[in-house]
Structures are given as structure tokens and as C-alpha cells.
Image (tube, rainbow, N blue to C red; front, side, top):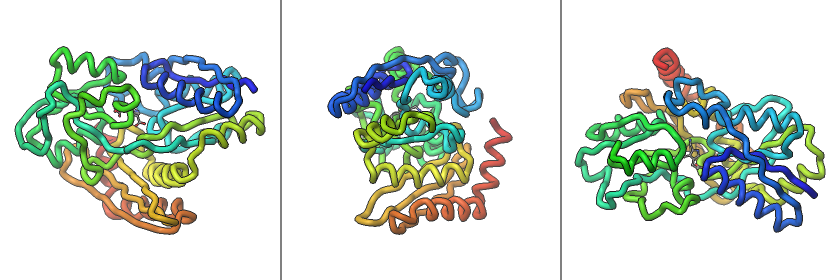
Length: 307
Ligand SMILES: NCc1[nH]cc(CCC(=O)O)c1CC(=O)O
């Protein structure tokens, strides 16, 4: 059975597409990778939060899913908007890698904990706000572009270090530049970080859909990330808002830690709740509603007027 996999063309995206293709090939399918350029890949000069994050890395792929040009699209789960159009669905989340962020530098001695000042390049509002709150001695410069572009800028001396998801660094084979692994208690990751999500049109051939899901979906990762995404949907946060959420399995239960930080780092709201895996989505919804009542709504209003 032929399966056309749509993917962005960055090195990280292609690694993920190859990984997906490999799993499908093992399952006896005949995968083909189709590279599709997205708005997010083209616009490199403005900060992502300012172009409006909604679907910048996904829109073009979704159009091709609808037209049947491709059967499935692979995305980093964290790049997917919290709510999809009704005619699209996510049919698989691949097993999650380590979810933490890392300090990435050519200087292996560099450490956030040491207290010495240095310059970090990142454009993630979550990482900027977290740095402002917990590491105010660090200077931040805005740095967009895919991993290779950012690595190039680092090598050219634009900054001393980057903050990156371990998952991406690992997939690209750049572990040697990890100066420090950051705690998820402080740098709680973005929703979906570390997993690859498979999206398709709701109208895709049900046999293909079932087979792809069987070969790629990890049920525990799926339960966790669906809970995180419920949280994100209630907060209506895209990747331009400093919202974080991490669900982890504990036997038959799921613990969800999630929250929001104001852009200046002055306020942080965070909660952890645990419940039966089957109730994870309800729990995520309630956690989000509690945070909104406790001040997250106010922080979101401030962020929207600042962008
Ligand atoms: N927003 C970009 C992005 N989307 C997914 C990853 C890494 C891979 C992953 O988290 O699955 C990255 C790079 C980064 O944040 O360092």
C-alpha cells in the first residue's frame, strides 16, 4: 500500500519523515516523502510571534492533505495548533523522547546555574519568559530559523548559547554541543514536545488510517499529549504564548503540570494535578479553567496586547 508522507524540508523535519517512513516500511507499506515548504519556513526575518503563529508551519501541508496530494503529514507535535479543522485529524503520536530543553553551546563549560552572565539566542516566548524569571543575569537575543540556521548563527558568534528541545538536538545528532540539560521543573516543555504527530484528512481511506495508526501510535504518549493539547486549547495558546504543559504517566494515572508565565517573567502560574488516565482530558480542562480564574486570563490579555 502506497503512503505519501508530507513533510517540511528542514533537516529536522526530514529526519522525522524518514523515521515515519521507516516504521511504515517495516509494516509492509510503501512510503514516499513529499517535501512541502510552509510560510514558517519562508519568513525568517520577523519573529514568529509577530507573524501570527496560527498554522505557519502546517497550513500548506493541510491543504495537500485535503486535496489528497499526500495521505499523511508529519509534524513535531508541538508545532501543531491546539485545535484542528473538523475535516482533519491526528491519528498517531510517536513514542516521546526525553522532553527536556537543553543549553546548547560550543563552550561545554557554560551553565545557567553558575550565575555568570552570557547571551542566549532564542525566539520562543516560553524560553524568554522563563529566562527572565529564573535567570535574569542572562541576556536574550531573538533568533529565528530552523536548527541549522541557528547553529550557524551560534558559530558566527551571534550568541554564546541556544536553548533547544533535547529531542531536536538528538534527532540531528548534535548531542556533543549540549552544555547542560535543563530541569523540566523550571523549563517545563511546550505542549507536545518530543513526539512526532501524524495528521490526515478525516476522509482518508479508513484502511490506510488504521494501518498507519497501528504502526506509529504510542497509546501512552497519545493520552498524555491529548491531555496537554486540551489544556492548550482551553487557554487558546499557540506557540507564540509562554504556555507550558507536560503530562507524564504514573501507572494507570496521568500527572499534568501546566501553566503560563508573563512575558516579563514577573508572574508565573503553574499547577500539577493527577487523575486516572481515562479522565486526563477532563482534568486538563479543569486545570486550565482554574488557571484562567487564578490570573492566566489576565496574563493572556496582556500578552495579546503586547504582540
Ligand atoms: N518550534 C520549533 C521546534 N519544533 C519542534 C522542535 C524540536 C523537536 C520536538 O520538540 O519534538 C523544535 C526546535 C526546538 O524547540 O528546539
